[in-house]
Length: 254
Image 1 (cartoon, helix red, strand yellow):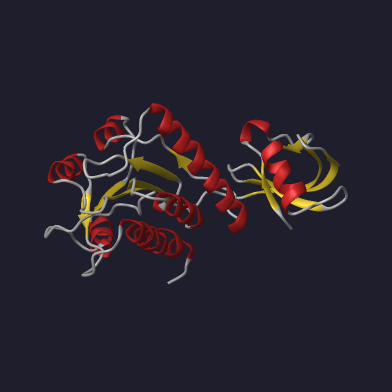
Image 2 (cartoon, rainbow, N blue to C red):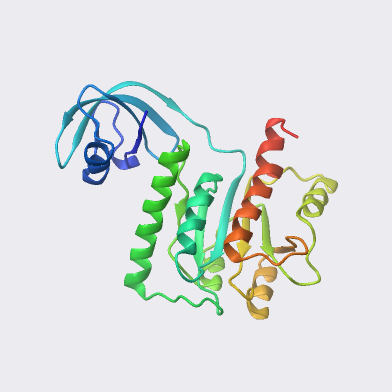
């Protein structure tokens, strides 16, 4: 069945309906009709199977049939991503959603080619949120990542986000393997982290000052291996490895 998104503030099982954007996708793109069934989700774990009861250009009415709830993944991973040029950030948001990231923080580094004014930042955030919604619709993900407003690294740390483990992908000689970082945590009797931050720099990496700022805020530098990866590849690689180490093993997959 086709999946559609209903924002949390509009989620009412006794009165489910699709907004104009989702209605257009339902009626004009996949051409569904009254009597057909769909799956709807609210991006906060709730999902429902529903039947189309009314079809209009501005709204599609739905009748709730049954519903379920998906628990959050056992580790909430935030991707702090320096915004690359071109459309690569769109790809990163899409893949981060598919890989279960809890949040995506677009970062404007000193070496970031792209810079935004306030209006452009709002527009980009709205666009990336829409991309995350489409990715979640496609992959069956019922939890949407929170898309932060683009900001400088210092602004991100000043916001006071709390994490159990903070990491920064690094090309420097002091970088260690992620497995070693996790083993260090286990060696001192700490639990597996429930909230993790991974920072990915732009082409050319973060500046020395930005790397020092990250380390001063508790980030541990990790290596991604002997091959220098493009920033979008590094993001997907890190999220994949973190998902395996912190999500799958916790569920008994080795």
